[in-house]
Amino acid sequence: MRGTVDHLSKDMVTKSLLRTDLELENFFATVREDIVVTAQEHMVQRYNHHDYYKLNAEFRPLVKNKRQLSSVLMATSEGDEFLILDLDTAWMFRITEDGSKDSLPEQMFWTDVENNEPHYRNKKDVPYDPRTRPWYQNAMEHPPMHVNWTDPYTFFTTQEPGITISTRWVDTVDHKDIVVAFDVLLQEVSRFTTEMKITENGIVFILTEDERIIGLPSNSGYDSDEKIKEDVLKPYREIGDDRINQTVDIWNDLTNKDSCFHFKSDDEVWWGSIQHYHISDEDKLLVGVIVPEKDFVGEVIHSENVILIGFILVIIFTFYILKQYRDKQKANGQLREQKEEIVKQNSLLETANDEILQAKHEIEEKSSEILDSINYAKRIQTAILPPPSYWNKNLPESFVLYLPKDIVAGDFYWMDTVGEEVLFAAADCTGHGVPGAMVSVVCHNALTRTVREFGMHQPAELLDKVTDLVIETFERSDHEVKDGMDISLCGLTMSTMELEFAGAHNPMWLIRAGNEDFEGMEKSMDLDGKTLYEIKADKQPVGKFAYREKFTNNKIKLQKGDLIYLSSDGYPDQFGGERGKKLKTKAFKEILIKLAETDIHQQKDLLERSFNEWKGDFEQLDDVCVIGIKI
Image (cartoon, rainbow, N blue to C red):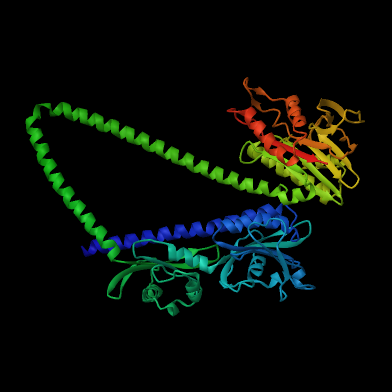
């Protein structure tokens, strides 16, 4: 009995350690993955710590949906920093200029329902330089994109203990280092250990390498944040838990640190073990498991009862078989042959079943990995799209209908500003899904570079330069790549009521009251006193093309009440209706002109409803992107 209990106890402690290691990996791995994805997203964007609209929209959901995170920070080697912090009752956003050299950091406060402007601002009462903080210095001591964890320390803003993960990259345009960091409160680590249940009465605890406790044990009265904060980061002996004291003391004296051991506490036998958990390549923690022997004894008794009952059943079954053997001795030869054949067939079936199950498992695993990768790609693609707050600020009377066919899309919409001019576009890259999304990142980056790096803003000149950049990018490959995009691009200046347009295959439509003729605008359709004009695009793509020419720049004088529409070909090319045919451009224009009297903000829902009604049970053929603006 004693030997069975010892064997089972060691086995259960080992399994508890493995389970704890897996749970810890789930706790920390998502934080590591998110910081790498965040760094990769911002490597393809220009980082602007003043753009708190975009940063607030990007990072508030991340902190809100990750129980591990309390704040996100991003700082440059010039001392510029932003921070977003969850204060439970509100959100704080801090902007620091040049390491507070000339002014104190500015603090802004939001509630959950506020998305655009904070409800309160003030100046922090002390200077602050992010370059002096442990997370920044830790990242700068390692190569770019190396993930680092700090030792436990006290956070500057909340004065609470925690640890910080950070990494850095180099902005090759502005020639500066940028560090991104995620804060994890130690009370969240203790919540993890106090809530973890490995057996009925077993406990888990976590220590730093210098044996300070950062993960307090369960079943020890730590049922509130206040109690956790009192003891977290103390040396393990100061919390007064005899079980932990004995476990660490025994482990420190062991030669084989991976072994399990037992001891007595309060006249009760306990089993324990401690192992190293690598939180990163260089940083590790000590994870301890302690379980009372009584949690295992019941399983031993249950196991021995099962063995006894099984033995009795075997004896009864043996006598039965012997009796049957005497009665049917003459038929045994045939039965034996049948039995061997059945066993053989069963063996073949079991082998085939195992192979099928293995193949199914591998397919599900690969499918899950691919889906996870595509979902991360969606985060990256979503990050390059202009956020609703930025779009509505520059074009308040407008809408964007964006319906990707798959998780990621080849269509995208784009916006930038140059002085009073608002540049906006609807683009359709070659393909859809993952290939289309990869092309969209290249094309989006080329548009943004042309405006911000080369200072161009006239639509035709802009498309000429974007074509050069796209061709240059794809010509680096050893294989010929002819991918590119169709696009309709506008530059709108509201103060002068002027609009410039250039397009690659995709035209622009303008709906105006009356039926007059205007130079450069072809009448396409009229209804109820309104006319739909079409401004033609050039019949060439943005990309490699044998008969490439300069793009045409169209200038239009706008009138109050004009409606402007840009679209990819996904909407009119959709199959549907009673005959399962394409909607076509003519029917799409009829839908637009019928919606002309409707409020511009309602048109998005009406267009989407009309699309779904037409599509019916047919599969969506392509990505859909429609932009509408009212002057």
